[in-house]
Amino acid sequence: MGAGHGGSTTYKGVTLHHPKRWHVVTGKGLCAVMWFWVLYRAKQDGPVVLGWRHPWEGHDDHSHGHGDKH
Figure 1 (cartoon, helix red, strand yellow):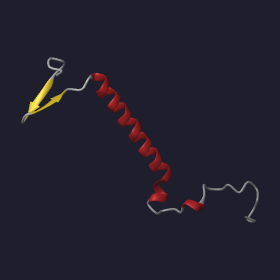
Figure 2 (figure 1 turned 60 degrees about the horizontal axis):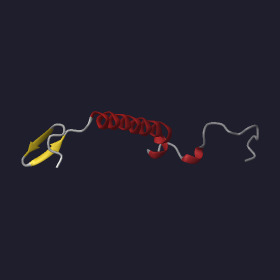
Figure 3 (figure 1 turned 135 degrees about the vertical axis):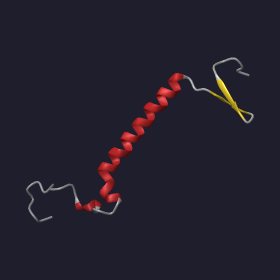
Figure 4 (figure 1 turned 180 degrees about the vertical axis):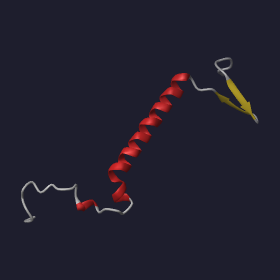
């Protein structure tokens, strides 16, 4: 089954077929997207996750002119 199609490597009786180029490129691209997302979320939520800030402490000043009557 599939003999002669692309390259493969056999090691201790297990044959590993080499991935196609588009699989490699797509995998690297999705890996980069994943890490960008992880680092973005770490930037946004890192202090809360690490316990440096409480989530209800807010996003700076959103008083909208209401004063201290909240």
